[in-house]
Structure formats: C-alpha cells, structure tokens
Length: 68
Image (cartoon, rainbow, N blue to C red; front, side, top):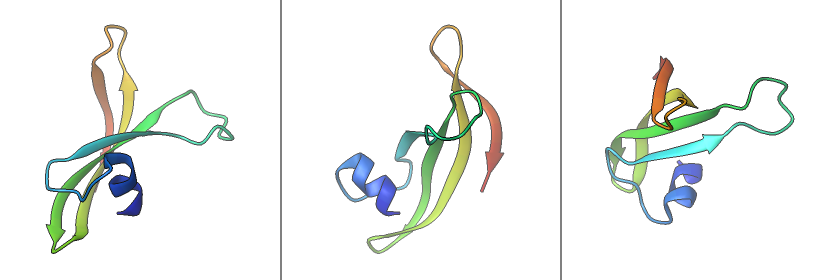
C-alpha cells in the first residue's frame, strides 16, 4: 500500500491506478506493472489488482497477464 500512496501523493481510493517500472537489474524486456486499488478498509489498501503493463505501438496499454 505504501508504494501506491507514494506514487499517488495522497491516500488511495478504489479505482486508483499507478504504473510502476520493473527494477533495472532484471534481465527481461522493459515492462512495468499496473497496480489498481480494488478495495480499502479505512485508510488501508485491502486488495490490489496487479497486471503486467506493456505499451503497444500506438502508446495504449495492452493487458498481458493478470493476477489478484
């Protein structure tokens, strides 16, 4: 939850999304991870949807894999 709050610069609400790049030391192609807040409990993030994020040639995101 702290990474999401830091990236947003505020407390999260359901539906908020952030895209976070993978660490530079990984030897995979450059990809990122999309974190979507699914639910909160008070001020705490309760459930996050994690998706691999790869921009397509047109610059719009493609959904490659999904995990909850």
